[in-house]
Length: 278
View (cartoon, rainbow, N blue to C red):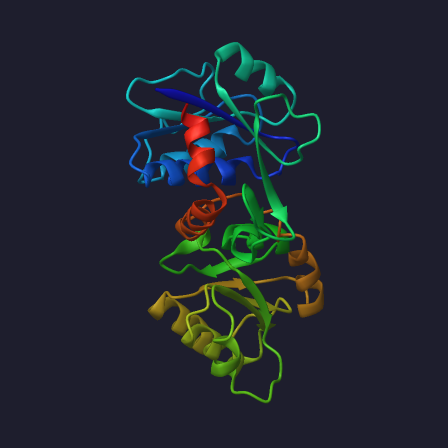
């Protein structure tokens, strides 16, 4: 039916996010969708695994080397960032979707803007959930030791980093203000740790490198609602380590899929969809 090539103007422009959003938009419009990742860079295998987990699209689950138009499907292929994608789209006769800037875009290409200050037609605004890291990325950034894992595990998304600070509100009320959160608190602050786990925090990062109380370990192991980590540094040092995880996190997880699907239903109007399928 149709072959659509998606590529960013630069690495981390959001091509994977937009490819998933486009697949979601087309699938929920009634089309059979196949989504693949073109080989050629270090992110290819990771992105292909993300595509394989989608329930609304078919995928091989591994990087491909030759994009092909599959009969009966709208086939979306994410290509590595760079100018070669435009040449490949032209050679294949594919529709070309560019994620990033409209500067130097080939004639006939559809531009999708990501990380924008506002939303609009073919524009996705900056979104905290889409920019949020997973527990795994917080572990890597902080060098923390995993003490116990939640049922959701290291793939859980942490939309907010919340310091277990002294507040005029109770700890439960304070933590519940922030959905999908990672709480950072000193290991000796048993009351804050128990409150963080009791309110269902995705992740609790204990700082200071000290062995936590058995009460905390037992609670985490028995409930398995919160992944419990022990960071080697203090709270301030750990927060500095974690700051760079927002906006650089790779796209993954059901929560992010649902969010970009909803945003893309607004950003891609029927006329744009029809042009991509023509």
